[in-house]
Length: 353
Image 1 (cartoon, rainbow, N blue to C red):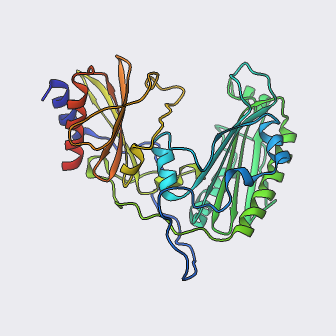
Image 2 (image 1 turned 30 degrees about the vertical axis):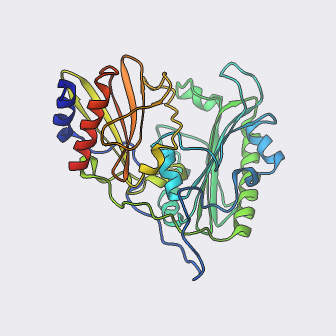
Image 3 (image 1 turned 90 degrees about the vertical axis):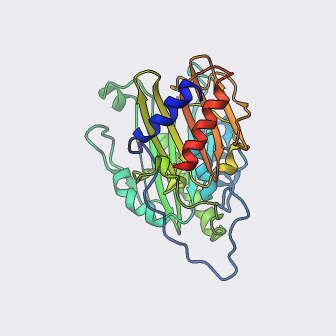
């Protein structure tokens, strides 16, 4: 075993408690008829697709007349969080006005998530979502415009300027419960649209989405993923989700890290039951990540049925199917020759706990 592989295995015992993870509880079991069946595979269980959530006018009012679809229920998972969402059966929809930050096309980045079987999770988080904390004050939320319970708020340029922020010109959050569906709407990267216009747009959007979900009825039962607990390699309780966009990780998605004075920091994410996703992944790294600048390519790792890696000579980001789990590892690039052996050692360490 290479020196790096040895350090990798030896350091696993130092995993810290998970950070920034999804909720520690599963949502309430839905009331279903005797004919309700489980979904056949991982994927959205929401009976209203992204294209039908909003009419053209409502979509243009939030994302702009030239908004482009960036993600819908047919999109491949881009990371373990989106894989967890599909495994749970949530629907994540993204539209963007197009262009880079210098583009002046009116519109915004619009993310709508709909999570089935989520009433309990919504009720746990709703009050906090609508509150105005001292570190991020915003205008009072407008509540109960649609659905069984709802609320939304927006901040503007002047609000953010007072906080010393150079973030997007508007940020909005809307949350709604419709039967057992939790709907979350996030808006950012806003150009030209006013806060008043966005508030009106959110009210219209919530009304339309609520109407569609009410008519659609109950979803199929959750697809039974092949494992119910993450390996002990990185297992611990997880924090609560704050949006429907992260509910899929409940009890299944975990993060940990450890440090080596010789080889630096290693970060790991594990999705229990998520091995199915590795062969379908089309990874997209976060904008502020120091990895993922090089294309992700399949890599042959002994004992691992599916693996992808992006290595740029400094840092590697790799996804592995290990048993029934999907694993993401971020670590210093050991070079193309040593990388398969290092990842095989990691897979063995995860399997043996």
